[in-house]
Length: 361
Ligand code: SF4
Ligand code: FES
Image (cartoon, rainbow, N blue to C red; front, side, top):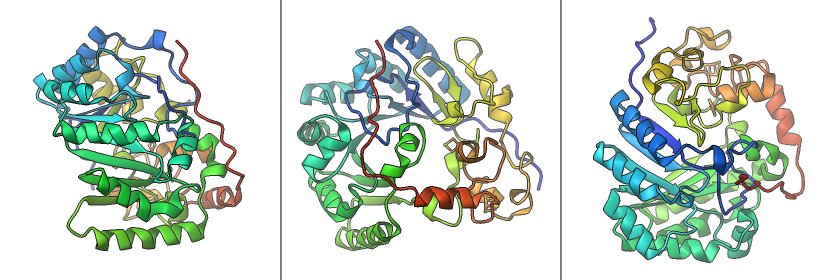
């Protein structure tokens, strides 16, 4: 099979800021957070959004950190909407009052994804590192009152995965149109806290069954998405639906990445939108072309029939485990490095987390 030509990206993750009022130990932001002083200005973000739309991006995901920490968020959202993009806001909900939710809806937000930490308020606040659970419940009300579709997203780990059904009940009670239960991905702060976050195999089995029961209980909706834990699977996730294929990420200081965690791959050149046009970075840069398609693959991926559907798994995970981003994802049972993942599964620690730090001013 020949390589398919590079197509325009579909979606862009816009990491407006690394500032955040929460301290979740599973945060996938890099351990080296970008300071407020290094963030792109509003005018620079407007230019990035315009370039992205010209490039073909149709889904713009405003994220962070906490995007509400940017006072110019309504203007940026309005610009994205004027460009004709679908606008998604990914938020902790802290600071999302009724008035603010209404304003964002007026400016053109199409959908809001609200993170919750747990159905148990005490543990939720412990995981967030702040007393925010009650604030989030009010934010959910503000979102639905503004007439906006709501996705409730909960990252699962050892200290909350036993409450899957209660979590789904909570999300349904909040009026969620979609519930995402995502097992922790081990990047950034999540990687640092891996031994304290990893659930046991017994917990995972119970969670799978709990999800099945919830699907039966809520057969008429909302949509329930369960993202599996790839460390425990025999095949890797099709990370990003392929490197440089559908998505790009722009970090608070304007670095352009094929995935949110790719800054951890220290062997790749850093591309920045202040130094090079977005289209040139997407189509021509070494970073975006490094792992596109299948030609870069080695065995066992090179001759594996799965390579067109899982794209060899995750480049960031391959780099974390082996120091070589072109290696087969060690989460794959066919990888010679799979014993490294199995060894990680045996490393457990008490949940004494290193909480996510604050971005510097
Ligand atoms: Fe996917 Fe490569 Fe594993 Fe095959 S060998 S299943 S392509 S990661
Ligand atoms: Fe970067 Fe998977 S997280 S490629």
